[in-house]
Amino acid sequence: MIGRKSEVKYLQSLRNEEEPQFVAVYGRRRIGKTYLIRESFDYEFTFQHTGICNKEKKSSESQKQAQLDKFAESLSEAGFICDSPLTSWREAFAGLKEVVRRSRKKKKVIFIDELSWMDTKDSGLITELENFWNGWATARKEKDVILIVCASATYWMMDNIVNDKGGLHNRLTGHIHLKPFTLKECEDYLVSRKIQFNRHQIIQCYMIMGGVPYYWSLLKKGRSLPQNIDELFFSENAPLQKEYDNLYRALFRRPEQYIRIIEALASVNQGISREEICKKTGISSSGDLSRKLKELEDCGFIRKYVPFGYKEKKGIFQLIDNYTLFYLRFLKSNTYDEHFWQLQTGNPTINAWSGVAFERVCLEHIAQIKYALGISGVHTDVNAWQCKADPEKGLLGSQIDLLVVRKDQVINVCEMKYSESEYVVNAAFDKAMKRKISDFRLATGTKHAIYPTLITTYGIAETPYAEELQAVITGENLFV
Image (tube, rainbow, N blue to C red; front, side):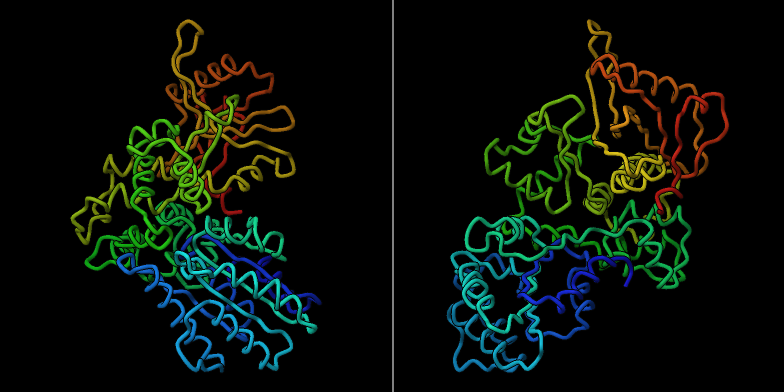
């Protein structure tokens, strides 16, 4: 298995614990949660079940019955035949108890996947899950139950399982938030598949697909990166062409407003405030909007950052999901020319997107950037900063997309520049960097030393202006 070493070690250690174990695994769709769990337990489960995605047109009662019927099938596969159709989750978990009782395995490993889909309106699922765990599994003299629950709806898992205030409060013995692959893990995965991309091509691919393992599994060896992208996104019936709608509909029961928020954020590269989101979407500022923003953040589609020196209420929301950004730029209104991507060399739209997408890659590799700066062990705050022009205060107006504020009294002001060759640090770059640093010092009054820092794909060409940089981080440094 590529990566996931600590996660596999933890899951495999559960069999050696003397007490019952209840573990939640969550992370965005296609990230490899199911594969991780099945591989870690060598596909040996006392009981395993996967919830089914609900169809919006069905009534809540019909959805509940469909989930129960599917659960009955899983009970049957585990050796328990229901005498009649299940009518409640109480009956369903009664059947699960019987499966556990009949099992002769030393540890009874129960794996319930896509738990959030099973929780239809007024179904009573969570109450019966609480009763199963609190009133039965933990009360068994044998102490032999290992319960693994999993879902792609990260926000649902956080609210209903991880941070539950009811019967499951503090009942978890552990949880895993499965993250996307890093660039290095993507490289290792390609090597295992005998696909030969150089590191610059891997960065380009990450700019499009992020670190979602399933997307990378669709790449084919013997084809160039542009050929692969055309086949995956732009050819007729391309496998990732409809992923956008499927992605949000699988996570959110009413995805329309979530998509409006996402598309509003996609329209401004540096991110926008809550107030601006309301203006662009027509969604009123309310607790419901706060919940939706938190859900999108929990699922890894957006990030919220508070610009340096500002208070929480001045937070900025920014789209960071690579696939979503790519889809909205190139697929939403595309006629799907099967050679679209191969013909885009030098296109200004591509160049503009490349700069934004590379910034997203950098933001997803902060640990690698810190390592390259030699400050892995130094406490840091990572955020961004901006100010409007204000002649009275001497401010020219600046936007800094990445600030690394260090405990050792240094701030790295980072510029992220995508380039197909060595980046040329010229007079214009030097002037812009000095303007940003001047605005930052003047507006914040910081006493920290400020290090102008460049992150770019191939490093820099030697120019007099390049000597002003305190640190240069290359694409190679992101593969740690």
